[in-house]
Image (cartoon, rainbow, N blue to C red):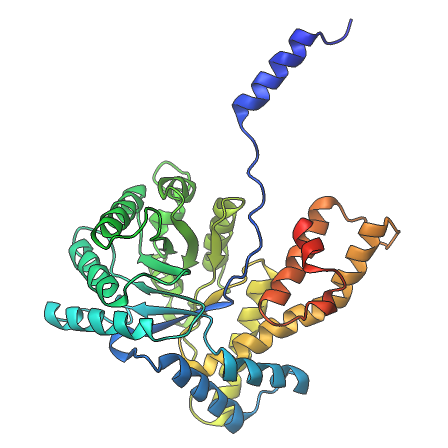
Length: 383
């Protein structure tokens, strides 16, 4: 007999009740890293200082493992825009100070950030748990008083969330501060630093991260992995605490699934193996850092933390090399897909979308030029 019009109407009603699948988040420029600077060491020249120190390390030690053309690209980047994302730290990297001292640093840091030319910025406050929520709120309040209207890509890092209640507190604090400082509603946004086991897996056997994202009411911009707090909580010995440890991979995989199609970005953590000392020690640290940056990119995580100016050369070199290495294959496969040619790989629309996103990210970070990708930016955005 076949389906009736009534059957089809019932199907439509059921589909509408289920809701639409969220569209993929648009590919706007995102930073390739976040640089954390303790508040007491931050000033209006910090970004320039980091660039100068990174160039000095490059001059002194060279950069083995990368072509001369990539090293030249790194030099240009360090001279013009050494830091893409800056986070003034009032938490673990800053420690616990007398209240009057943190007040002074909050005001000074807010004023200094106003004078910095950096595309993305913000601060990390202390945890919003009961023991430190008042201090976190006061620091952010004073910081905003000295900063004035926040720059467009300003974000607050909320460390160590353990439950959805922490996100509710963050939303309330943002609303209170918007009202107190005359900001439009929704202007203040935050990111969560996933560094507790409770944030990855709740007592009911499910991850609270999707509920945290919903509770943020559109204010959440990212989930950042906290390497060392998380590893310590799971009993990993200090010598084995690293971004490529299995516990880190599990946590980041859960973060990626929770953030998918929610417009929330996932950022890798940091490595505490710093490129300092003699040339051999610097080269060894650079090799570790470059490998971890590349590893994150290969796993779909396009941002990570940097804790020292001398980590900037390998951050940019590894990132540029990743996109340059992948450019020929990406162009070939996208051309074959769009022209419906056989290419030995049967790409689907989702893969074509992924290729377009890869090329756009390469352009946004400066690894690829717009002409080199073989398609206009408008064509890639449309895909």
